[in-house]
Image 1 (cartoon, rainbow, N blue to C red):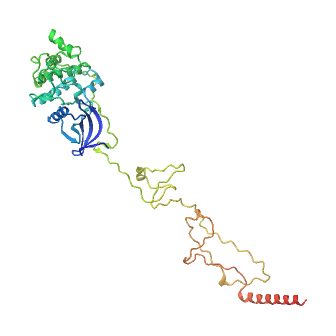
Image 2 (image 1 turned 90 degrees about the horizontal axis):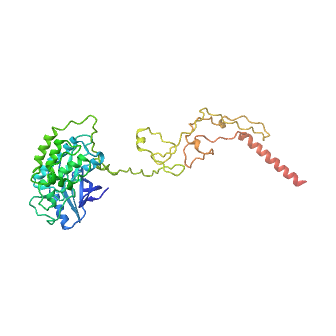
Image 3 (image 1 turned 30 degrees about the vertical axis):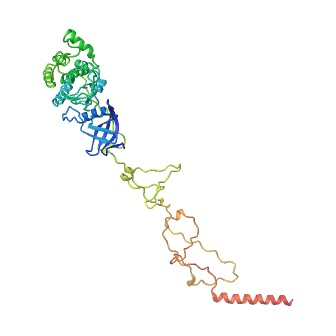
Length: 442
């Protein structure tokens, strides 16, 4: 996320630089939209006065890009305007070179339309050039330009901020009277419009000084190569060195241009359409079309840790796949309670095996007594195979203390009954005593 200016404008990334400040793409948290923010770099009194003049300009026109609001934060100030993403006329010339005459006429008509509104407010722009004429990113559709950067504009009759012999503007787009220190006036802006039109038609910056000298010495020259004669007559009326011979208003020049367009040839079928591209580029990470994107992280479940692979890397499961696919966790994944899921044990035959017969008692000299039905072993009961038996050692299972009824009652070894065993033991003791007595008498 970027720096939030004055609690409202979040600066995202720089998109340009002007004479007194840098231009940033910013997010307006109050109006919920992207804007262009011009941040003032210097804070001296002269620059602040220019800033105040520019931000105070309020002109509503589809082809004028004037400041919309301003804000101050500590020692920094900025003003905002609409975000225009198609670059300037300089970008279009850099992409295509000389432009078709009808396309130039469309741009020139929009520029004169916006300039007529600016002049109607009594404002002289004083810095009309290709870099200050911005383009909307309209693709191959009808172009749409915006006249911008009113940093050195002034209203007629206002005091000048520079000395009388100091010229303000961009070299190469000055009107002759500006070079002589005359007061700013509307015809000076129209002269700059004529130079911009030549730049669009020829694909390179015109030599204004040589052009003025030719007009002054030889009068209006013929139409340059590639410029239709009707259009050249309009441009010549904008480029007259004498401001009294020039178009006096942008509205008058626009009417003459509309008449000239009617006499231009229609564009050919094979003419390449001019496309105005997006020059700003995509939004950086953390921002979307609707503003800043909140990054949400799912908190881990208590007691659950991510399983690891045999190489020690943490195993991560795609959240989308876990939603769309049925839940079939592999044996190594953990359950919701924190224990591991185990695969089902191997299947065992369901038919119970008969118990192995006990070996015959061969050590007794007496004949085997008849079996007592009460001492017979309990018949085998079939029990369900335990699911975890396949994962435990085959050891005798000892019941826990306090366990309930045993599944298998204890079994007694078969032998003679008590009524036979007691007399036998008595006879054995008597024989043992007789033997001892006989040894002592010998």
